[in-house]
Length: 381
Image (cartoon, rainbow, N blue to C red; front, side, top):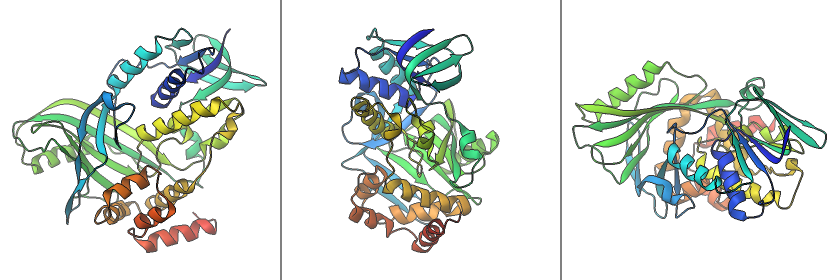
């Protein structure tokens, strides 16, 4: 069996970012690295969006917005995002960029196969695919194991699920420099449901119907709501250029407790997705850099994770949405209705001081959060 220093089971966003950080550091040139994934990453299978100032992947952004709408059935607010911009990176652009950079390094290898098992055996690890096996010193796993979450009740598990249409309309109805971050004016139907609009010209935009909820919908229900919203915008004729569909796990389940000395879970499989919002790109950028630095100092992968206050904030929100899913609109509206936008995004980026935390938290409905806190403190779900 071929032996490597590091094997990445799965080559999604977090795996690719981590290997790229290792390359940039020039500290791992003597280490052999293998990425295994049945998906060759040759299609534009997703888009990632995030708010940021000038960042590492800025040149990959296919669109940027300086402002964004927040709306519900009663009011709307245009958010000035400065000093941030809201940015969109297409999956294929990211894959092509990263794979081109990684291919310049002879110590990095790729196998296009499905991982069927991996385990730690004493001082080394084994990874099995349908065709062969490999050994390594350490494994970085990004294959999400939903059964870990579904078979427990201590930590809520919601889905952020959506279908999006990239459309080109006859009418010029979009404002290219202003996205729609959340539009809760759509019927909630007992859930947290909103429309998300990313315009790239006056006649072109990505329009997504998004839910934070326990249960998924039939495909037709998403598409009916998108079509209704398009008509509401005053569009009579349009062409669907492309479609996308996604389902992002929203949970504070402690995936890191399933790490071992030589196996670490990363990406959504390791809790790297921001639990309260489903945002992944910015979190993965931070976590991959931190993991690269950690590997230069430590060998025990169980030491990487540290729980912080933001994990607990997210847990309380998910506890609320798990029991009363319809309150999402109320909670997010309370945050965005009057609060300084910069503080909100800084809070969601987990970069605020405790005093700044309070500025955001005090805007939220206090009763439901106090009740959720009390239930956690006495061990109830």
